[in-house]
Length: 247
Length: 335
Ligand SMILES: Nc1ncnc2c1ncn2[C@@H]1O[C@H](COP(=O)(O)OP(=O)(O)O)[C@@H](O)[C@H]1O
Ligand SMILES: [Mg+2]
Image 1: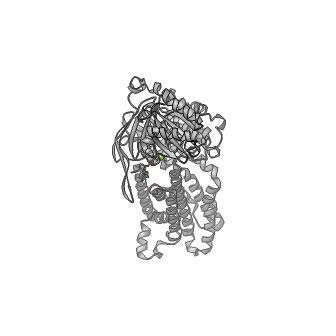
Image 2 (image 1 turned 90 degrees about the vertical axis):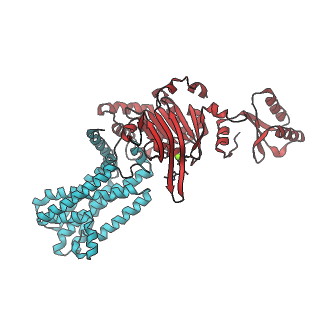
Image 3 (image 1 turned 135 degrees about the vertical axis):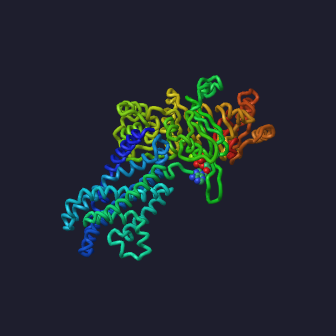
């Protein structure tokens, strides 16, 4: 099958999913507006003045990751339960078409959430983010989205039932909320946990965004390179179609 | 039912075409908590263009396992599957161009309208963009969904949702094999018949259709050929008439009200019981296996029974009788 046809299929499937999610806007709005602004509000009150940038970046990261994990994993879980997944597997499409379409259909909401959070952080809480860094930040949001995609994909692909998939997604959600070093510098963790944190794409996403805001281009490049590595890893797994066909 | 004329053994043109599906020595074992469980055991099957084959078997017989392997959803343990000559395991994308599937208990996502769903899947299956509106109109008409085109799928009844799945399955330019896993399970009798009519109406397309069912009536109504599967193996194959002919008897004489027979009636029944096998005895009813229900002496037995006020009916063997004897459950007593 030609690459061109593959892209056409991704476009068609993404459009179908976008149409559907536009019909359940309440849920999506909750994730992309209410949740991040709420978290930001609390964090900004709690955070020490020199950690406010970290709090802003952390909020964006957490929301993107949660949306990614939940949207992708749970869509796959629901599709498996209602056998829509089987229907897709029997189509002449590559597994990447399905996964890319599900993921892409949530990208607008992810980016919107990031933009809203950033806007509220700057305008509402006067968090010092230089305007000149905003384009680089958005490039970073995209990278963060792509580098956390694989977490949701792994849960959705490996889980057999929606119940199992939901439980894993919840567990990861809790870990993300409390133990991901996105709201505090990774150095506050005990050393062994720091190593765990460094294996986590969110740590690098948060380093990247912080580095962009404070203008440390060396650190930003290093983090971007690690994030790109994650993107390559996930793309490979998705293209290979992990558990697309069952054994 | 004109099942015998339809298939016409080897003379039928359908049988001379290359098969759209060829399954060879297919075996599938699941690895479970209790070790390996073989759900398909050395299956061989061909489906030809224009032919409707019903896979008939009880729950757990291995029907879905077979269909999911053909559909490329499940990898075989051993054996080969070819759709239109293409190996499903080695060349899945190429093979799936010729395939459409309705998985068992499939519930499409509900937030698209019927028309959006059909158009989307038509595009995914390779219908050129310019041809999609016409194709969607045709499919909506063919499946009787025109008035529901702008309805969200989740607002449709179960029967109508099956029709949407069928429309989706028929979309695309190249389908040659259609797999339907229990297409009417869980819908009401009227909707079931309308799905049957739709499937029957597909004959003109000359698709090969492989459907599974545990409704004998469904196999009888739709299938040119019935394959009976039990415990992962094919236990019989043939037309409905051929499978029926495998039974060692040709008719069944059913007697009810055994608990209030007259003395003469009791003597008559005892005499019959000594000459014919009692196939099934349930409460105060029993079923005798008689040679040929149209032979005058058998009809005369019936007349004698009814003359004594015994409630009795005589019927030729059904596919159900054959099926039950093949899968060895012996359940059910219908009149
Ligand atoms: N994914 C699976 N893992 C383990 N065993 C399975 C799986 N799917 C089906 N089975 C078993 O294989 C047998 C055949 O199942 P199935 O093909 O679904 O039968 P049918 O469709 O005829 O009801 C059953 O005993 C069932 O329990
Ligand atoms: Mg089944």
